[in-house]
Length: 250
Image 1 (cartoon, rainbow, N blue to C red):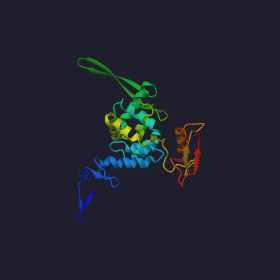
Image 2: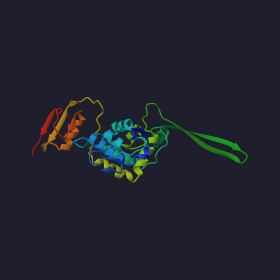
Image 3: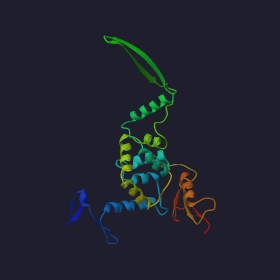
Image 4: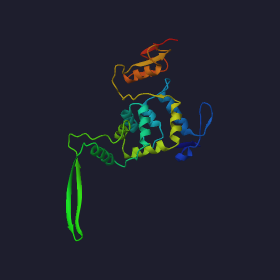
């Protein structure tokens, strides 16, 4: 960052930004990063206070989880609840160091379930002290055999969407006592929406809805989800871009 001083720009190191001043109120901000993060969160959630799933994941303090990775994981999970449950399951396993470890677990499960052909050979070796007998087993699966998943759902989907470094980063975040505070802080800006792929074409693609009052057949939350699943958007107030105002009972 640079600071304008005496008509000249002076470069400052990043750690120099330890406080800032709100231009509107003059309030000294002790943690400007948190301040700007709050501004961003309010803008993303909008008046309807709804978190797009990918943005919510991106907002979590998880090492290496940027916008593109968050989009990929959000697409695999579909909902915040699925992500939350997958993280809970991730905390119960030994995090693998590679995808090969996962394939080994799948193969091992296939052997236990009788899905893998195993051929055992007996070997006899004569030594000075007598005969030694031992056996070797070779297991292999045919191309048509589908090996069982190494992990239950939704953890299996999360493991497929991420890679070894992200598995460890997610586990470290989940194990941190700060993770619960992280989630609570973000949820004050809005509730999570189901994942909607960018540019999704649906029956309501490009349409914007505003809801008021109490709906007879479903809750407002359910109505929001229905619109978003079909590619539409929900806003908190009527603007020029509003397609329809849905008026419920007072």
